[in-house]
Image 1: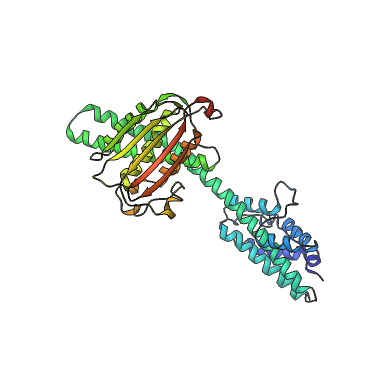
Image 2: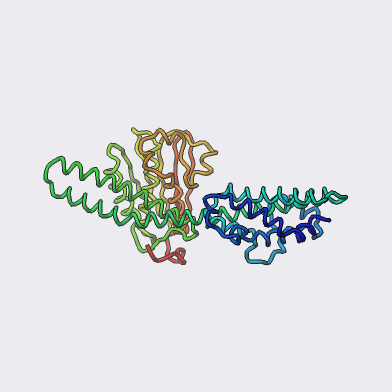
Length: 383
């Protein structure tokens, strides 16, 4: 009996083996019904049997081995994809998901071979079956990972949003204590609360922005007319206070009027200058240059420090990336490694660009933003 026919004839026996293994996937399987344990298993096996019965070209075999599903599939979601999503929702981890397919592979081949499935076409059928299982596994893992990532980002977003209210209460109380001026100890304690609250707020803001971008929502901006030079000067004043002992210089050239989200631009600058403070030489000032031309504006943040290797520079704007030796640098414990990623997202939300270069003369981050409101059409209006 050919393997495809065997799967159809012995479907119940194979499903019983699937269920017997699925019940061991604890704690997710605890309390699951037989129907839930067998979730979409019959549809998956039926699809595999159809695949085994379908003539296959050499090119199709190569594509399948590379984990690419056939283009002829018209279903909005396959049984493999639905199974992966439901297993993720039930609490299974990715190791348990892949173990299901390993157990299915072993069960089908064992039952078939023990039932006399040794014939001229046996080797061909086994190869085709393994290809089908591998393709299903690749598709299932991809869908499982997508669902898990989305759920994690939703959780981060909700956590960050819900933590804002008690944090704001802490900051307001600390600010009130500092204004009472009732002794140096109270004022010093209030100042520590304010600083810690500000660090927590910055981390939460980064986490919320990160979760929004990973959910496909993008950075929200509310563009309006601003003087970029004035905005940047104000932000630098605040950074000088927050980083006592560090020096940052500002140079302005040309017309710096623009249509953009001032708060987001300050956030972007704060991330760039904060990064320069972290990795630059302590005794050499960070230099910020704002230049306005007829069509656009540029913001450059330059510092002197260790050269960033090309391999690191290529991925420097990716989330959770940090520069060389970040673990040993002061302030690294107050960073999620999202600052440059969010700076890039803010630039892109303004239809702008950001790039970095690093050599023996220093490291320079350059942001270019369009000047005119027409270029910013389509941006969200809610901050």
